[in-house]
Amino acid sequence: MKKTFISKTKVEEIVKTYPTPFHLYDEKGIRENMEKMKEAFAWNQGFKEYFAVKATPNPYLIKILSEYGCGVDCSSYTELMLADAMGLKGEDIMFSSNDTPAKDYQYCHQLGGIINLDDISHIPFLEEAIGEIPETISCRYNPGGLFKISTAIMDNPGDAKYGMTTPQITEAFKILKEKGAKNFGIHAFLASNTVTNAYYPTLAKLLFEVAVDLQKETGVKIKFINLSGGIGIPYSPDQEANDIKVIGEGVRQVYEEVLVPAGMGDVAIYTELGRFMLGPYGCLVTKAIHEKNTYKDYIGVDACAVDLMRPAMYGAYHHITVLGKEADMADKKYDITGSLCENNDKFAIDRMLPEIEMGDYLVIHDTGAHGYSMGYNYNGKLKSAELLLKEDGSVKLIRRAEKPSDYFATFDFSEYYDKLK
Ligand SMILES: *Cc1c(COP(=O)(O)O)cnc(C)c1O
Image (cartoon, rainbow, N blue to C red; front, side, top):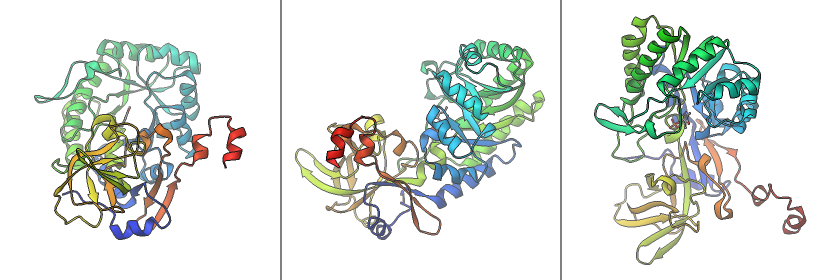
């Protein structure tokens, strides 16, 4: 059974100041998970997590992670701006972008961040953009084919736009070395939202073997191996959560097996987790405002796909709790809908839930990553606020809800807007 970190009483208190819908984040949960994560990789001297900013680009949340030594993984100009605004620079920034504009490379270089090249053709492009090749540089690898864990197909890298082939990364390392690069990194992201402790160790073994070959063949110094993101979370109640301790230990074993005998026992392990770091520690709180009974029974809520796109976009499951009715029988079948003029704007389809009354608060679980950040403004809908439930039980507004003026900010609309206000 999946539990919420928020009670009905607490929500009733919060809505007096901040009306629904809002995303709420759990500071205590974030910190406890971060501590476990750090501990799981403490065996590796240079270990560093670069939080994937795109998952939850909120500086208040990233600040909590940075207290534990986390850096940031950026992939765009504005994500770099966010890092810059937070005072992060140098090796606290990993720039794992793709199809990258020259000005993004320039900005990252100016901040001293580590550039992770997605393609061999980006070497001359980067050199042209920044006038040199940085001393520390990373390349993204794609082994092609299917990525399997024993016999289970996890994903299809051969079909993904990211990374370089084996001959390309080999050639890239040779070119970069010749152009003055001194410290090399290897990066790969081969499967997303994996709910198995075997993903990182399997990926690590593959990358470690590639690293040994690359070091032998090109003579470069490999400084770090970046296992990137992809550790998942149990969105549905029948899934078992990953155990980061087991994962860290699994990576350690292959490290001892592959890297240490090759004389590469000083290689740092980097990660770029997003979902695993924050996913379970955020939820979307929304209120039931309409009930409609036609060919199916619908509950309309005050949030919509603008606040959380994953169900509409991927058909993703997000668990729902009706606050105050946690112990009630789930004997009603509902579609839980938002207000977009899109029939896929449903947080749940044919979901068994307790009987819902108007005014009930629904908690949509696991929105702490790839939740708020994926939102958009379709139908002129405005994005919700983000709140932080602090360890002392108080609540802090960490991003206000959008206002109509935000929606109109990109027009020169003053002529009309002044009248509307
Ligand atoms: C999205 C992304 C991540 C984070 O992925 P999660 O699934 O949230 O762990 C990390 N690195 C890169 C390059 C990404 O694109």
